[in-house]
Image 1: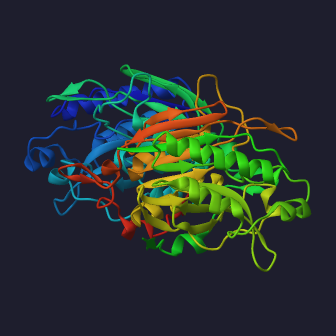
Image 2 (image 1 turned 180 degrees about the vertical axis):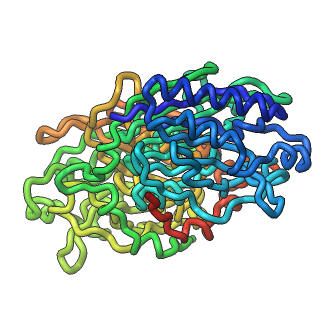
Amino acid sequence: MTRIACWTAAPRVGDLAGNCARSVAAVREAVTAGAGLVVLPELVTSGYVFTSPQEAAGLAIDPGHEVFAQWSRAAGDAVVVGGFCELAPDGTVFNSAAVVDATGVLAVYRKVHLWDEEKRFFTAGDAPPPVLDTRAGRVAPLVCYDLEFPELTRALALAGAEVLAVPTNWPLVPRPDGERPPEVVIAMATARVNRVVVACCDRTGTERGVRWTAGTTVVGADGWPVASRDAEGLLLAEVDLALARDKRLTARAHLFEDRRPDVYRAPAPVRG
Amino acid sequence: MTRIACWTAAPRVGDLAGNCARSVAAVREAVTAGAGLVVLPELVTSGYVFTSPQEAAGLAIDPGHEVFAQWSRAAGDAVVVGGFCELAPDGTVFNSAAVVDATGVLAVYRKVHLWDEEKRFFTAGDAPPPVLDTRAGRVAPLVCYDLEFPELTRALALAGAEVLAVPTNWPLVPRPDGERPPEVVIAMATARVNRVVVACCDRTGTERGVRWTAGTTVVGADGWPVASRDAEGLLLAEVDLALARDKRLTARAHLFEDRRPDVYRAPAPVRG
């Protein structure tokens, strides 16, 4: 079994130093608690609700920033996936996720599906997430809205991902009484149809008028939530990655072998 | 608003005449109740749990069978989607869905994803479902396990489908207390990420030792269940197809325009 930690945080927009320091403390706490994989929210270093591209650029950091070295030093045997506002050498700003272990920054993924106003502040990435063979299994980072595009999650599962590590900032949207956040329903279905673990780390609080969902949830590879946490702090969840490595459902049914790419290639005609 | 009727049935395996007669009565009842779209379960004419390919072939019918003319005569202004065991002219047997209105059989779709033992009894279809411009909106039929392949449901939504009409026979599988059937969770996510209505018509009862889920559920284009029925009989649900025709989420977010096919084409590499 693998222990996953997600830190439901409340970053303060603009407080780069404070957000970074709190994120390092959270990684330490998670590693002390035995986590093999630590997921932090989207844009955990900067906060989310920017008022201008200039503000976003002023809070953007590059993968050489000290916070990643601190995550690395705190990681021990764990792998850390966390969102940050990235400044590229040419000044471009991305909504990114870093994957870090004790050896340093393993990868930086730039969110390809920008949500709503993010399009004002960020440039979209142009490459799919990497699938990384780590001590915590084969991990692929995604950021928030990315999870809602089944083409991408399927591609990652087919490429061997066992865990989708998803830093998120889910703005609160209406839902019927008693229902989970819609994004969690999508995470459950994603896990079920691909037999992958989906670890969504959300934020909490209210930022410049935006209320957050605090929907942090780890979904097992069987599609059922293992644990959730809607308050600030650390969620721990045990997941079985062996299940994610075996896509066989029955003697004659197999999630991937039953796919029909020959049929998906053909466009469906409209007939009236 | 469009009224959808789903008939949670208990077909008797082998009783072709009785199953057909009961299905016609259900269509009449649904149309009398004002349904614009009537969905019947998978293999509603034949039953499901066959003991041999010969038994399946013996219960297979072609689209010229009287039951489809009866559905058509009972349809009034409605569209009927129901599953049947299909005999092709060359003797091949398919797990199919017929789409019928007052003018006759509009289309026959042959299930492309065969579940488990179905592979012993049926040949898989080799074409995607049609998207049909009907009086009940743009309807695409799917059969059961098909719904669990997001490549296919996405393709149908992109082709303009507003309603996925899904005859199913869901064998009961374990689920945590208080959870919906996993197939319903998948239907909810499918509806949400594509903004389409998903109408799943399941069966009930126990057949040759197989217990059925009786998970009949209509999910609105916003991803939330409108109504469910786990007992034999007719479920009625009102859905808004206008929502399914508009994929805009916010001023700057759009379910389809935000897709990144350039990224999905690139295989995700594994890096260790």
